[in-house]
Image (cartoon, rainbow, N blue to C red; front, side):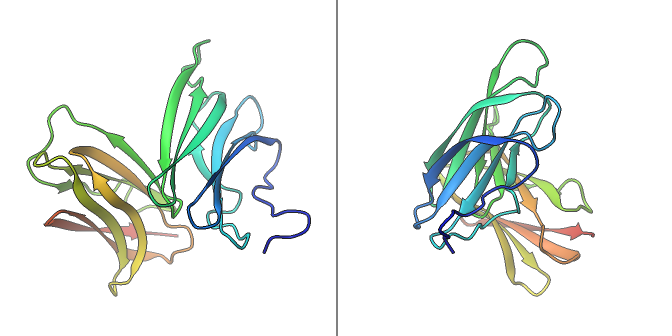
Length: 212
């Protein structure tokens, strides 16, 4: 609940600043910030979602958005979709004096999705084996959307062995191309899970193994 003195969004070590809030479309907010919790010369980007009642929704002290080596600065966040956000920042990971621009999309459930459009789009959907596998606590899932048409109603969901949905990684219209999503299994029990990609009338499923 919202308290008289405010709700703690991040209480990790060292400095957190440059906070940027946006509406999540449901009375709450998604907040991104720059973070020096690792110390040294590292400065990273994190985000957290808080609902309308003041309860944080994602990993304690925020989801890591950009943690490559180097200094991150001038982060901003833009609302997209239903409760999603795209975060941009200046990034000095190259190790030179140059600052580049990076971006990441965070979904309403706190998972990350990035897109890499292919030079040649595939003719049918494909779903790669997650990597690493087995994993703990997160793993990457790559998939491809075919070139037929311009937009495809696409979902990537994870289920337990009883068929109960435990995570929605993607649920939106996507253009043809190659994509990747990060599945963060914090809070789930060890065991076999099934991830299923659906695009239009096509569907593919594979298994992954969470070990703790």
